[in-house]
Every structure is written in structure tokens, then in C-alpha cells.
Length: 177
Image (cartoon, rainbow, N blue to C red):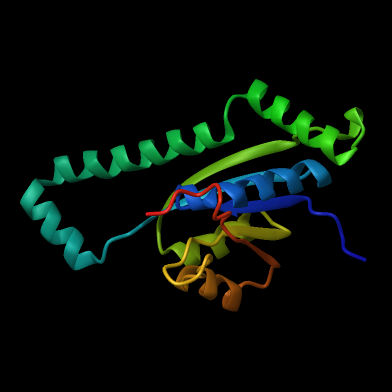
């Protein structure tokens, strides 16, 4: 028997290809009345690159740029989860389609985390901090096939002690680049 999820970690790079993975994570969150943790990791530049950029830009301008990137990511994640009214409408619609009774269909809660560091290590780290039962990741559109699993997903799959759900892109709704 599969135990119900209490906490689900959705890690995103904020690309369009993560849309289906977000929908899967939100649907699982509704189904199991689980907390949904949205995570975006701003990949840290190697120290030598950071040092050179700080020297070129100046420490203050560098810090302002890094802070601005973190704020932009936070705003994007907040937009992804939408306003409470929009989320409730979407979730109620999902519940109707799934045949779930109104009183059992409630979006439990959400956490939004923006971090800076190694993507794989941060995904694993926050899955432990929030005691997540599963990690949801979105695959990207491949060059030669419809779905590609990159090195980040492969590393998470290898290193995670938690189940990892990889959601492929929907080639019909994802614009090609």
C-alpha cells in the first residue's frame, strides 16, 4: 500500500516546460491534502567567476543584481501559485473532474523557497528540511525526442532517498524553441 503524501517538493527552473510538473504537484497536493513546497534554486556561479564579476561591476552593484534575481524568482513563483481565489477555482474544478467531494478537496498549504547554490544539493537539502514524501520535477523538451532528462534530474534520481516523480512535457501545449 502506498502511504499518502504529507509534503511534496516541487523544484522548478521557472521554464514553461515545468508547467505540467507543477500541475501534477498541485493535483497530488489536493488529493492527499499535502503541503506543497515550491523551490527554485539560483545556481551559484563558481567563485572565480563571481570574483571577476564583482571586480568589474563593483561589490554593491553585484549584490544588487543578485538580490534582484532572487526577488524576480520569488515573484515568478508567487505568480505560478496564483492568488488564493484562482488556486481555489482551479482546484475545485480539478476536484469536480476527479469526483472528489467538496469537503475533502482543499489546498492544504504552500511554502515558497528561493535558494542560491548547487541545484541538486539544494533540492535534496530542502526535501530533508521539509520532510518531503516525494519530489516532483519537470523534464524538458528534447532536441531529438519529445522529452529529455537532463543531468540535474539524473543526479536527483541517483542521490535521493525519497521517491522522485519526473513529469514529461506536453509537446502539444509547450511551444517549441
